[in-house]
Amino acid sequence: MVNLLKSITVYILLLAFLLIIANCGGESAEKIKDTTDTTPPDTSITSQPLNLTNSTSADFSFTSTEDGSTFECQMDNGSYTSCTSPKSYTGLTESSHSFSVKAIDSSGNADSTPASYTWAIDTTAVEISITSQPLNLTNSTSADFSFTSTEDGSTFECQMDSGGYTSCTSPKSYTGLTEGSHTFYVKATDSAGNTNSTPASYTWTIDTTPPTVSSTSSLTGVTLSTSITATFSETMDSSTITTTTFTLKDSDNNAVTGIVTYSGTTATWTPSSNLTSGTTYTATITTSVKDAAGNNMTSDKTWSFTTLGILTWVAPTKNLDGTDLTDLAGYKVYYGTSSGNYTTPIDVGNVITYGVKTLSAGTTYYFTVTAYNTIGNESDYATEVSKTIQ
Image 1 (cartoon, rainbow, N blue to C red):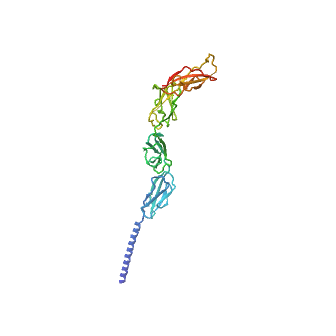
Image 2: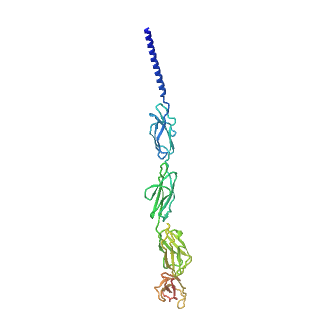
C-alpha cells in the first residue's frame, strides 16, 4: 500500500513537471513569434548637390532608420546596385538627373519607397550684351550702361578700365570720369555658376577740350573768286558749321552771300559771286560751332583779308611815231601811296590784267602801267588811276 502511494506521488510530480515544461515551451514559442521583423526601414538623403549646378560630379550621403541596414543606389534609369554612404558620381552629362537610394534592414526588409533627389547640371556659359552706352565720342564725364544676359536670374560683375570687377546691376552708372579713352567691361554668371568667358566691353572717348581755329587762309592778295578757309584744332560737328556760324562781311559791314562746306577739319566759305577788287572783308566763326564731342568754341574767331587790287588796261597797237606796234613784249605795273611816286615796277608779262597783292586797308594807292618791246624799249606811263582800300 505504501509503495502504491509512492508510485502515485512520483507520477503526479512527473505530470506536474511535464505540465510546467509544456507551459514554458508555449510561452517561448509565443515570444519567438512576437519578435519576428517584417517592417521595412525608412531611407533619408542627408546631403546632395545644389538643385542647379555646373558641376558634373555629385556626392550623396544617406541614412536608415534601422542600424545595420545595407543600401542600394540608382542613378537615373540605371539599375540599383549595392552602395554605401557617401556615394559619389563623376562625369555626369549636362541635363536633369535623379538619384535614388533604398535601405535594406538586417531582416531583409527593403524600403518600398526609396529616397530620391532630382537636380540639373548646366555647364553652358551664359552670354551677355550691352544694350545702351555713351556716345563713342562725348564731352560728358558721366556714363550709363544697360546690359542683359541670355539666362534669367544671372548676376553681373562690372569693371571700369583697369579697376577690378565688382558686383553690379543694370543699369550701371559712373560719374567724375577723366578726359580720355575709357573701357567698360561686364560679365554674367548664371544660376548654375557658369560665367561667360569673354566679358562684353565698350570703349569710348571723353573730350572736354573746346575747339579752336588753328589757321585761316591767306590774309592778303586774295583773288576775287577765292574760297575762304578755316582749319580747326580737331574734328568738328559738321552740322554746326553753316552760313549762320561762318559769315563774311565787306568793309561796309554788309553780309556777303556764299556757301559753307566742311571736310576733315577744314571749313570752307565760297562766295556766290566774285568779291570786289581791293576791298577788305571780315570773316567770323561764332561760338555756336561745336567739335564732334559737343564742346563749343569759347570765343568767336574773326579775321580780315584784302582782295587783290585788279588793274586792267587796253593793249597798245601803235608806236609813238604812229607806226604799227609789232614787237610788243610785255607790261610793267607801277604803284605807290602818293601820286607820281612809285615803287619798283612789277614785270607782269604780256597780259592786260593784273592783281596787286600787297595792299593795306585804309590806304589810297596810285597805279600806272608801261609797255615794253622785244629790245627793252619802254613806253611812257599810262594815265594814273587811284584806289582807296576799304
